[in-house]
Structure formats: structure tokens, C-alpha cells
Length: 480
Ligand code: BES
Ligand code: ZN
Ligand code: ZN
Image (tube, rainbow, N blue to C red; front, side, top):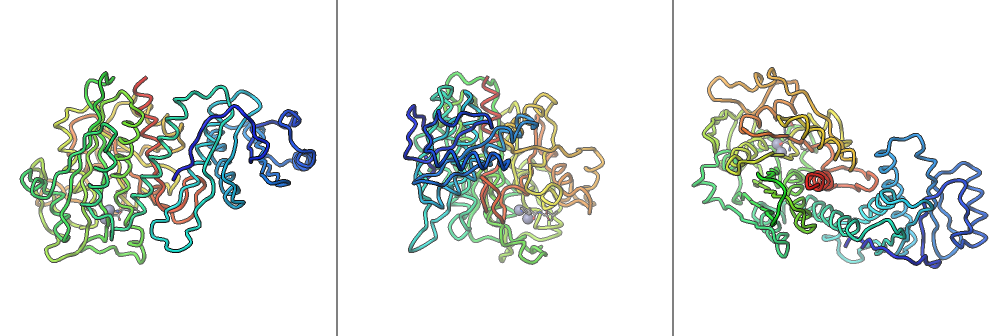
């Protein structure tokens, strides 16, 4: 469970505390024990900016704001999330169960950021551990600040919970989370939230002639699913819906074009991270009761070389009747997404955003440090998305989207082929998707940050839940 973030108006000298202060702070105001003050002052003299005092039956953390003096505001906020991570690690190492956070100046965003970093760092995936589970001890994060409103806390708790749930889904192996279970789990998320969730089964996909999804599913013994979620609250601010599309490949072996690089398959349970991202975004938006009409579409299947698996050389007729020459069965994500993006037209959307662990090329280009994006939305939308990227530190970098790249997916015998050449792999994938859109649209390739193999501050290790915070921030701002 995520630790609950609450507000309090009482400083409790018996539990651990984190203080946002400056070198010149008067330590007496917080009733520190004399030993604590002595140690603290020594550390300040030694020019430490993040100080941990461990003198009594608690920890005292002091974050000197001088550390961020020359940083841009969004970078400072990120620094405070990172401090929240350090606090969480220490609190758990000492088996304490609570932390209070306060500041000398009346700060709000800064305290919330530290709390967010701390709470997100407490995540564990223990479902498959038997015996002693070594669960984290931290249960409560209490904030002492008159500036923080109840709604700030409610939203922060909702977002942290949603990120935890997205991580859980990504961390589930395909032995549990096949396409049918994935849809069931999303259905379960929708309960008691006011979300409408419908799942199309294989028969329905066949009658809709969703050729892309069905082709990828041919090697599987488990049927595909297509999950539709809708949040349409009374008084929603947008006339036409925002549609989010998420890649739901529950496992990607590469299919008959089996993944060529040793061990590159090991983490491919993460290939539904885009689907988890959009599902948990709708969950959070509904829980927070944001007045915005949002739809999510999540096509799901595994991709494997079974008896009747689709093959290189196949020509597939997609949902919108365009034809695709398959030249690599490992480029399966775009097959699913092509169908889903074409399906999105029926909503007459104001904007469509798709999220996918789509290409190794995107991951190779920028690593886990942000999201590669491209698309046809106007500058105003792009700028709002970029701002949400900075607000949440789930940063966006826009790739060129020139016509030349579209030429690289021309096929000799069909309307397009499903791979490009040796250059611009993330972009040719985007150009493929563009062919299925006729509305303002952006594509987000999250192959880099969705799943990480070593600890990365408050994002943790393995499934990161990346993108949920970005999308919540964007939709929240769209409501203003
Ligand atoms: N799921 C992979 C992309 C991926 C790579 C996700 C690394 C996360 C981490 C995708 O389906 C894929 O296999 N893409 C191929 C496309 C190629 C065959 C055109 C790739 O990037 O190699
Ligand atoms: Zn693949
Ligand atoms: Zn894939």
C-alpha cells in the first residue's frame, strides 16, 4: 500500500521530521534536542546541503534550500522529489513508520514534491515473495503547512495510488497478466469510480475486422482484447473528447522474427506499459472527478511464434481497410495501434494521444530520461504537453516528423510496410501510425523510461508507472 499523505498541525518531537530550511535558520524554533543541533551545525559548516541527523529514536532530515539556489524552478522541484526518495530509503532502513515534513518559509509546491518523491519511493512489488516479505515500514507522511489545501492532498494521494497500480500491472509477468486478465484488471479498476469500461472480445474484433490486432494475435492461444474506457462527467469542459490510446502487448517475443539480441526479451512483460498508463490516467481522472471528457482505448495481445503466427511477407488488411506488408513481426505494436487509432476517429476527438513502448530506437536515443514524442497537434497543445513534462519531470523531446521519413515505409505491394530502414526507427514507427489518424494527434514512445533495470530514485526499479503523472497534470490543466 502507498503511505497516506496527510496534513497535520502538530509537530511531534517523537517522530522523524524533514525540514526545508536555509543555512541561517534558527534551529531552536523546532525544539531540537541540543545533541541534534550540535550535529546539524557541524554538517552545515562542512557545507552539506542535505543533512541526516540520527542522534535519538528518530531521524531529522534538513534540506537546505541553498542547494537549489541557481536552478530553474522545475529542477528544484525535482530535487525535492529526489530528497523525498532519500528520506524514504532511510526511514525504511530504520524501520520507522512515519515522517513529518515542514518548512521554514510558507512553501507549498516544494513540500508537496518532497512528499510525492517520498511516497512514490515506498513502492514494492511483493506479490510473488513467499515467507518473510520484508515490507517497507513507512505508513504515514504528514505535512505541516497552512498553505496546503485538502484538494492538493487528495489529488496527490490519487496520483501516487495510480502510479503504484500502473507499476503493479507492468511488473506482473505474462504468466498472470495475459490479454484477457489485463482487460479484467482494467474492468476492476473502473469499479466504484464512475468510469464506463467495456471489453471487446476476439469475436467482436473479428466482426469489426480489426486486422492488425488479429494478425499479431495469430500465434497466441489466448484471445486478444480491446478495452474501452470512458469518463464523461456532468459539466465537462471540452466539447469533443480527448482520446488516449495505449499499446497493450502483454508479452513481446518478437513473434516469428524472434527478438535477435540476447536477453532483450527478458523485460518484455513491460510492453503493455502504454496500456497501463492510459488506464491508470483514466482511473486517476475519475477518482479526482476532473471535469473533462476522456476516452481510453487499449488493444491487447501477446506476440509470439505459435502455430498460425503471422509471418514476414504477410499482407494484413487493417480496420480502416489500408493494407500493410509485414516485414518484421517484431514491429507488432504499430499493428495494434493502427487499428486503435483508426477506431478513435468515431469519437470525433479534439485530440488523440497514444502511448507505447514502441521502439528500441527511441530508448537508444534518449535512454530512460524522458519521452520521445512527435505528431500533428498544433503548437499550443505541444507547448502545454511540454509544460506538463517539466511540471512532472516526465520530460518530452519532440523528434522531427518530416515527410521524408514516410517514404521509408513505402511497400512494393501494399499501402505501407511495417518497418523502415536503418535510420530514424522511432520516427518511421510514428509515420506508420500517422497514416491511421485524421485528427490532431501526438505519439509518445515510452520504450526508454517505462521499465528500468536499476534503481532510479523515486521512480524505483522495474515498472516505473511513467507517464501517469504527466497525463494527469495535462488533463488537470486543460480543466482550468
Ligand atoms: N516492444 C518493442 C520495443 C521495445 C524495445 C520496448 C525496448 C521496450 C524496450 C517493439 O515491439 C519492437 O520490437 N520494436 C522493434 C521494431 C523494429 C523491428 C522495426 C525495435 O525497436 O527493434
Ligand atoms: Zn516487438
Ligand atoms: Zn513490442
